[in-house]
Image (cartoon, rainbow, N blue to C red):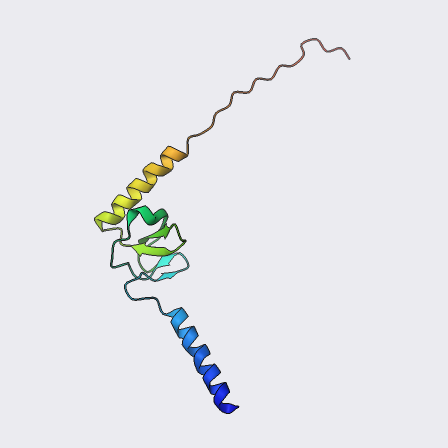
Length: 114
C-alpha cells in the first residue's frame, strides 16, 4: 500500500512539473506579460490576433500572438517578422471593421391639441 501511495505521489509531482515547465523553444507567458520570446517564426497563416505586453508593467515589452488553436506566443517587437505580422493584422482588422451608418429620420406631428 505504501508503494502505491509513493507511485501516485510521484506521478502527481511529475504531472505538476510537466505542466509548469514550458516546452523548449516556446515563449513563456504569465498572464499578459512576456517572460521570454519565441525563438522560431510562427507561420503567419496560423496567427489570428495579437496584443501588446507593456514594458512598464511586465519585465519585457513584447507582442503576444494568438493562433487559430488558441495557443499564445510572445514575439520580440524588435524583430522584422513580428512587426510585419502586427502590420498585417492591423490591416485585416481595418478591412473587417467597416462602420455601419444608418440614417434615422423622425417626424413629429405638427398640430397637437391638448
